Image 1 (cartoon, rainbow, N blue to C red):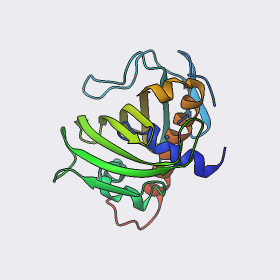
Image 2 (image 1 turned 180 degrees about the vertical axis):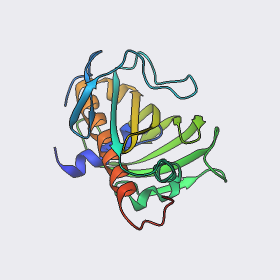
Image 3 (image 1 turned 90 degrees about the horizontal axis):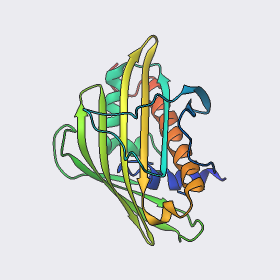
Amino acid sequence: MSGTRSTGIRAALVTVPVVLGLLGTAAAPAGAAASVGSRAVGPHPAASLTCRGEGVVPDALVRHRTEIVINAPLRTIWKLQTDVERWPSWQAPVESVERLGHGPLRRGSAFRWTMPIPPIPSIPATSLEITSTVRQIEHHACIRWTGPAVGEGLRIDGVHVWNFTEVGGGVRVSTEETHTGPQVEADVPTANGLLREGLEAWLRDLKAAAEAPARGLPR
C-alpha cells in the first residue's frame, strides 16, 4: 500500500473525531498483541482504554489499540497533542485545523480539521472534513473525543481515547479508536488494517515531534 494512500485515509479513521486513518488485517481478537510502531508489546488487557470512565464503542467491528514510549517530558507531549491548531506543523497529512472555540482544550471543546484522501474501492477521491468534540479530558492523563468524518460518499463516526502514563525513561502514550458507518463496515478487514496504520503513524509522528530538539515547546 502506498504511503500516500495510507496517510490520506488515516484522517478518516482517526476521525475520532479526531484522527488520522479506511478501508489489511482482520479485526484483532481479544488477547491480540498491541504494538509500538510495528513492535508487539504484549496482549491487550481485558478492558478498553478509558478517560474518566468512558471508552470506545464496545461492539464496534472496526477498532484498533496501540501504544508507544516517547522519550520526552509529559508536558511536551501533552502540548503537542492538545494544541490542535499546530497539528499541520508535525502531521503532514493534516491540511488545516480550526478551533471552534477559544482557550485551552477542555470538555466540550470542538475543532474542525481537513485532510484529502485518494480514491479507494467504492469511494472516490475526496476532501475529508472531521469535526471533533472533546467529551472527557484529564490534564496530562487522558483525552476522549468523538465526532464524524464526512466526505463525498463517505461518513465515519469515530470515538478516540488517548492515555498518557509516565514510565521509566519517558511517557507511554496509548490510544484506542473505533469506527462505525456503512462504508467501513462493508469491508471490515481493510478498514481495520488502515485504522491500524493510521494510529501507528500518528504515534510515530508524535514521538518524532516530541523528541526533536529546539521545537520551542516546554521540556
